[in-house]
Every structure is written in structure tokens, then in C-alpha cells.
Figure 1 (cartoon, rainbow, N blue to C red):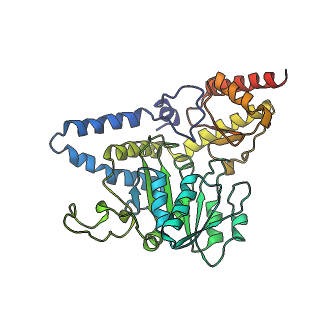
Figure 2 (cartoon, helix red, strand yellow):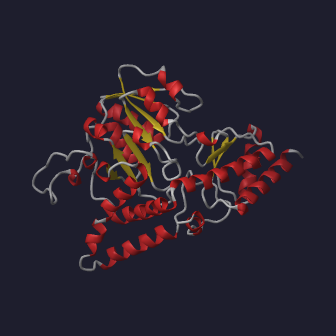
Figure 3 (cartoon, rainbow, N blue to C red):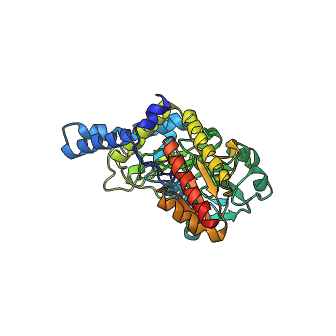
Length: 373
């Protein structure tokens, strides 16, 4: 599939630069949801077999993108639940930045509070960036795992997980991939745990995600939240409580939403057809244009300019007294962004076109005029 054909299926309006928050779904995902919901609504003879088949389909679709075996992948309704499964299953110290997205920090803290077998080891970082250099001096013999975001949600920094693997040795490497999965060609094989949701860059909508475990992680993690759907029983295990199965299948609570699995699978299958590399290049081109426009108007870019250290996020930081003016200018020109901590996060995708860049430039022009009155 050509990258232009991939982009043409989406109908998000110009001015949308908030894909790091949520990626509007495209025609392929909408059609898949309609078709599977129709099966669920009619309950035609044999139709539920097709719905049940979505579980293997989505696991195979994830496997095609990360290089794990489908048997090492489990569907999750969101990244946060996958992280909860992971953190509650760990014994020992987990090194992580306190600046990680709350899905990571809350999972670690809640596991420590509830079970007392996990100890969060809060890292000092380079403005939130977890790097091999900053990590090396902070590990000790009690550290059994390291958790890191593939792409930092605040700064847009693309972590060097290959370098981190070299530093941490045989400790478990937990990667929250939600801000990069589908748009970054990462060395997934170095990770022991990969968690992501599908509502952002894969544009599959809410209620979609996965948990992938290496064989080593599957052996070391305890499936604390393991429901009736996570046993080796061929049917629903009534009248007895069976032990959890082995592997990633143990980290399941109940039957998955088969329609959501189908949505996610459809989105991932299309990404595989066009290629993550082609998607990434289109996004890098768009973020480069955003940086150029910010430079044109003298707005400070505080995210990385190096292509090797960024995915789809550009972060700008106006002077504190000008933040409200810039926010109002973006709003008045129909540009959708996210504001956090005095900074604005602009995130692009394959649909970020000339019109969107033009709207951004117009908003910056209005901003510059207002502050120079």
C-alpha cells in the first residue's frame, strides 16, 4: 500500500495536531467495527466463531510489528491495565522516572502499597529523559527491572532502549510503547515487556491494547490478576477455581471485547501493509516543518531536534507571560494541541498536510503580532 493511500482513508480535519493524545480513526477501522458489530447484532449461525477468531488475529497483527511470537502477546483493553499486570507481578526493585506518564508510576506505587514485594526506585533524569548514561550509576543489586517509555509523553524524547538494555544487563526491561508503537521502528527484541494502547498512533480507538512478554518475563512475573479466562480449561471452569495458565495468557481477567480486537487488528494490518518506516518518514517530515515554523517566529523548541531522538511530538515553550496568548491564538485558528506545565505539545501524523501547517503558521503570526504590540 502507498503512503498516500494510507493517509487518504482518514477524515480528521485540518488543524489537528494532537495525535499524542488520541489519533482519529480511519475508514478501515470504522468499516471493521461496523462489520463485526453487525455480526454481534444479528447473531447469525456460526457468526460468533468469527468474533472469537479476532483474538488470534489481533495477536498475530501485533506480532507482525514487534517480532514477538503471537503466543507471547495478550490483548489488553488499554496500556494501563497491561502495566498494572506487569507491576503487580514483579518482586524486587523497579527503576523508573517519577516523570513517567501516570500509568507507569501509579502501577508501580499501587503494587508496592498493596503487596509490599515491589520497591519503586525513583530515578534522577535529564529533564525526564531516561538515558543509558543517567541510568548506569543509579542501578544496584536490588534492581530487578527497569521501566521506561519508548517516547516520553512530555518531551517527545525517543529513548535508546538498545543502549538501556546494554546497561541494565539481564534485568527485565519494561517498555511503555504507547507514544511510539506504530510510528517507530524500535528494536523490540531487547524488551522483556512491551505494553501499548491503540488509541493514539495506531488510530484504532479506545479499548484496544496489548501486553507482550518475553519467555523470561513470563517466567518471572506472577499473574496476580488472573481471571477465569486465564486457565488451561477448554471451557468455562465452573464449580472449581483452577490455577492460571503459563505465559502471557495468565494475565487475563475476562473475555476480551472481540469488536475492539477486530478494530485494533484492522489498524495494525494496514500499518504493516504500508510499513512503519514509511509512516515514520512522513511524520518526521511533518514534525520538521513544525519546528521550522516555530523557528520562523522565534518560539522556543524544547524537544529534541535530532531525528534519531524524536517520533511525532514537538514541544514548544513560550515565555510564561505569553502562554495564554499563544494558546488563544492556536484556539482561534482551529489548531488542536495539548498544554502541560507551561509548554505546548504538537504532534503530527501522516495526515498533517499543508493546510494544517498553514493554520499553525497563521496562529503563530497572530501570536507574534499580539506580543509585539
